[in-house]
Image (cartoon, rainbow, N blue to C red; front, side):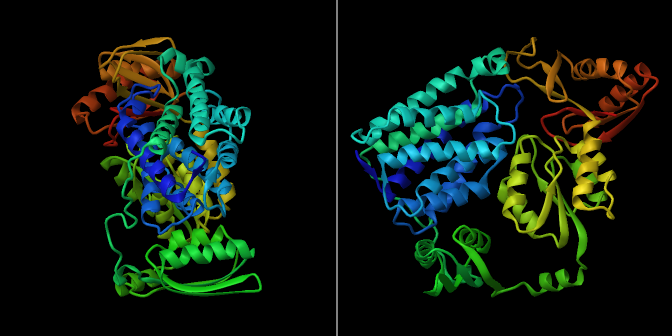
Length: 524
């Protein structure tokens, strides 16, 4: 095989998604922490599914158009850190295939090079022994074994084989992986995707590809009208002109003096605007809702624009109630077991009528998606890197409307740096982490992101997790947020026990209602 056309590339994306979908639970089980939180495999699977849905809804005839649709879909559908990194790998592929009708062997080499570069740039502090390492080694292998007479599928097999070797070596690069006896979950997810794509490339079975995703779009669906004028290179403008003609309604356009003027109807204005931005400089643009909801429009007008708006990710009835009492504009359902996508956060931003927006992701695995949403939006937004919901409560109390977003961000970050977070969950497998031997169905205590204790009861595990910190540091306040599976009486008894044990510390008990974690405890 010497080339890959648009149809074959679509089949490869379908194959990649299906193979990961079959193995996502295996990827989830590779997480170092044995917590029942369906994580990496689910996030990567939902990210590639979003990309595939975008491809299937687009009328496309070149690999450039397939890659663009996949990139747009994974960008907005990215969930968790692994999903964001996957979207950046896809973005690197899309850059390589710009303007191309087919993929040749030389393009494969550039795809892996650009994918690696784009993904590494997206991560502030790249860590070896992760999905990034697997991507880097495959890029190096693509360079090493490249020669023009190779068959394309053999070439890919060598590259993916090198990726598998790199994946198997990740425990030697990250001690925490070696101790837990697992390989990197993100790297494993990437290998599953590439294996699925390679299987589809070598398959002789032609799949019917549903471009409409099973639904015909009627005139009622195209409720937004866009007019724009865009300056750019003739090549880019022609490509955009052809793409928009295929995926919009009532399209009309003209290109003159390196400027494209166009008018059309669409059902997804945010995605179209992002597509336009990638191809040039917008000189002017207008968007009209052809069927506005008059009641909603009136209500929006009656609300005065304000200086600040807030978005927070939350999971649990108690947490949600506290967020509402603190006047958070948009509460996005999500957390450890359900990471919201970039698009979920982006859409929440678009619904807030405020000059500046402050986002609280409240989970380390949502921070990258929040930052990606802030970059995509044209609104002024900052992300406070909160890793738990209680951190957001403390950060919000530090907010000062008279200060700039940057000053507020600095102050909030200082506050959350002084907070310690302990959590109690249950182990889903036998493992060893931080030299602690953990048995399946025992409870685990996590302090500031590290497993520090295990026991057969929830309360003993929680006490073990915090005792050294409370005794060694100047802790004056302990706040216990109890989860959905903890009885209120049980939580009260635990709070009283801590009050008696640590007489110099104030103990507060709050209903969080969170899943997965029986207790989340802040120590200040």
